[in-house]
Length: 452
Image 1 (tube, rainbow, N blue to C red):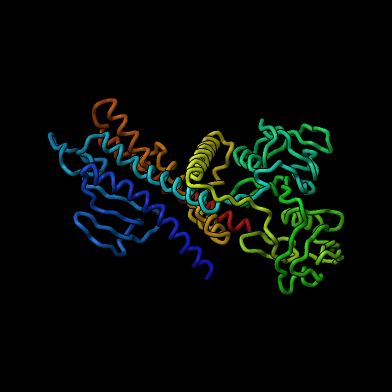
Image 2: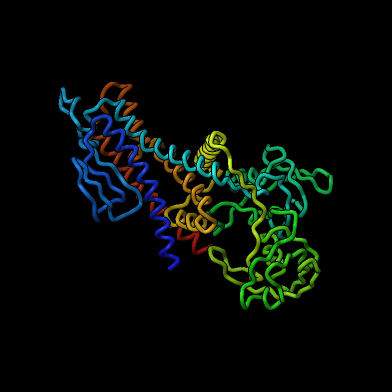
């Protein structure tokens, strides 16, 4: 049943993205007087729809995108002499065709701006530790961070030329510098220590990205103990006597300030029995727990105790509309810059192509965001919309950006590119696109298999 829910969530979110994108093309085409023959959500055979005027509004079988079919919109089409006032796409001036091509990505940018404005106005939530100083809570044994002589309690003072970074900045720089060695400086008990850290990516890591767990830099997510909200029946936690409302202050000699720290410690101890020091109703209680390898939805099988925990502290802002608009513009600018840096990183091999998420990976992210709440889902939808807009502006044939490049070239040379050359380029691009899609799908499925 859960997989069915994931499919429905994915279909709804992607459907909204595609609808907005294609509506942009559709609206500007109609404004320019171009006859639209088909407005389709999905590709392939028509499932159902309605014809209104000249346009067939349809839902098609394959829901991985959509298209607007305009009259005369074909690489080999050449309008007859003196036919510039017809309702066919290629018969219109190039500047109008450029506007039509730009309208799809522009609509995605507008949607992203609207969604983030909505979030900022009603519920702008961020985990506090992401914007705080990068204090290391735990360094797993034999990890890359341990090899770099980083210790629990260290504060990162310099990370790849960023002074006094937040955890958000550390995470971003790590994602953009995969399989590279970065310089950093940490404050260890008041003494600065300069070192180098290899940002290696293990196979099977979440979405193919480096995580602080795989590198060995586990953030201090809160200053206090771990709060227990629910103990799973039949779990090691229940057998140890752990109860709802307990606060885990120590495990053996370690004071964990995040669940990732607790899990990493259990892994380092290879599931050995552990002594828990907890606070219960203001009174100290000592418990003996025997961790077991357990599954968790969306997570690999590993040593666990088996309890739900209180989320780390979050900051929730509800900004006035004017401030929300400014915040949305700021966040969209930062996200756009990050996306462009990721694309650049792929070409310079600083970001692994395996980190790309296809339909399966995106569906997983949508499901996780939906579980965290409406506002988290809206933030993810904004990111997807922004990615879709930027991706479609890439100067690749069959994408909007490729069409714009062709039109700009033709405007400069003041004549059309040879029809046969254009057709061959589009055919080659289509084959490459299919191969790329197959690669991304295979990559998604491989990450799912390795992650479990």
